[in-house]
Amino acid sequence: MRNSFESRGSGRRCCLRVFMPAALLVVVSAFAMPAHAMIYTVGKSGLSNNCSFPTVQQALTAAARNPGADEIWVTRDVNGGYYQNQALVSPAQDVKIVGGFDDCWDAWPSGMTELHGNGGAAAPVLTINGGTVTIEKLRFTRGDATSSSTAAGGGIRFAGNGTLNITDSLIDRNTAGMGGGIALLAQSGSIGLNIATTRIAENQANSVGGGIVLMSSAGTAAFTAWDDVEISANFAVEGGGGIAMNPQSMLTMNGRNLKVAWNRTEGDGGALLAVSPVTIHLSPRPDVFPDVPWDASFAYNEARNGGVLALTDHARLGSSRGRAVVTMTSEDAAHPFWMASNHARGRGAVVYVSRPQAPLHSDDVSGVCSWNASYLSNHADVSGSVVALDGAGAVYRNDAACALVQSTCSEGQFCNEVIGNYVFPDVLWGDESAIYEARNGARMTLDKLRMSSNFAKSLFRVGQDDGFPGASLSASQALIVTNTFESVLEQRQGSYFELASATIAKNDVSSRIFSNATYNFFLRDSIVDQPQVYLFGIDPLQFGGTPVSSVLYSGIYFGSGDSLVFGRPEFSNDLTYRLMPGSAGVDFTTYSGGTDVYGRGRSVDILSQPDRYGPRDLGAVETQVAQ
Image (tube, rainbow, N blue to C red; front, side):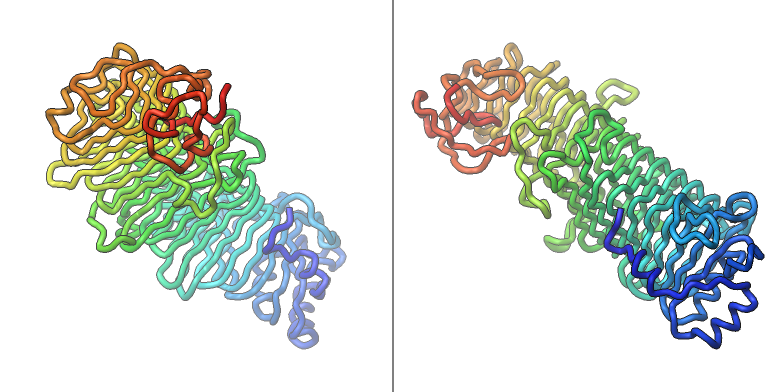
């Protein structure tokens, strides 16, 4: 594929190609052509004098002496088929390094040239000290930058300021203290990494960033992944199995066929570990809707907390300060962003945010926005098989208003699905087992969720540890069907919970719908179709307020709410859970505006059904026309 940072054709036409022995080339390049960009070829020495140099390092050194953006063409015509003992250094310069040539006469590359660090110094395969560097059709493997826990970049170390572009390449099986595959170090200004059609796999970091580490001490370290990028099977001991980011870093993954999978860490952040302030935009676009977990964009990543993403402090990356902005969305309404089969040994199989301190102002938070993003078969051992938040500075929003690119949820499309996620610790249903968890002052807002086949003690948990403030969780337009749980909610006194326009039906409930709701609990404009199941564990009048408003309920209820209606809804089918036009709950409430769980308009008045209080239906789904 051709990317915005590629200049293959124009670069080669403008450059003067050099075919001569190294000794003569030094003389010619020093006196005859100092002002022209050149192409230096690297391959076996003495083959009809057609190669400029026998080693890549000699070509890098010559390019640094020659003004202009030179190119280095690296052939596969070398003893053993690959270049061994590589510990290359590129001075601060503009250069393009291209592999895949059959020999020094070849004008167009095919395949890939391999640069191996095996047997050489404990150093990256390639160290770049700034400039604009483009890499094509090269494999960097067996690099070993392990002299200390902070030795950076097993495959490539890019430090200083400038831009590194990589396409059609492979960075694999490298080891480093940090940044096993690639280390991007902004040290004297901003630095950027752009990658397309490249795989970063099976690298290891002894501290953070198994695949990639982004570090900034001056300026910003920014990484952008375009089409056909895979970051897989990387491992970090302390955190960030796939990617680790310190403050002032930026990450954008916006392209087709992006894959971040099978990354692991003993610490936090299986796919991604970041410390605030950071900016992260994840918007992969699969070519087809995923049929199995492996097809998901983020799959099978594992960590202690945050199987996919952990926003938290880390001793090597720093302490959180300022604002973190994370967006997880799909810009293609027909193909949501899927995250599947990720695992947390503790909390947050997909998202974990820990920001304990109270925010100094409204922007001093670590916030995650998820929209048109779906979650399948993720697993936490303690709690939060989808999301776990901890602290007054931790925020999670699942609504269209927070997304950079807004899209609707269309009927028949999978949008904001939460399916088959589970918490299954050693002891069945631990005390904190939940699909969504917010505690210690954290804030969570959910909208237009379709939750089915999930397994946990509770779907939602809000609470606090002793001495901490209560958390808050609000959910609306939620279709909650065919799940297995003890109760919908686990709530500690002092926390806030609100559930509005929800449809709760055909779940396997072992206790109560809301077994321990407390003072700050509200259920509004909803349908609870769970025959023979108690709505509350205690009389809600005992904890004050009017917790129930405009609810159609088919089970058993302690106490009496002002707008509680007993009866069974009539659903048109068990796929959409749309009410039949004549069903109880149709044209019931006065609340108007907005859209239902499928993104369709609400307040649709069915003429054959008299309004009870207004034209809007109860529950998550609005009946659109007579059927």
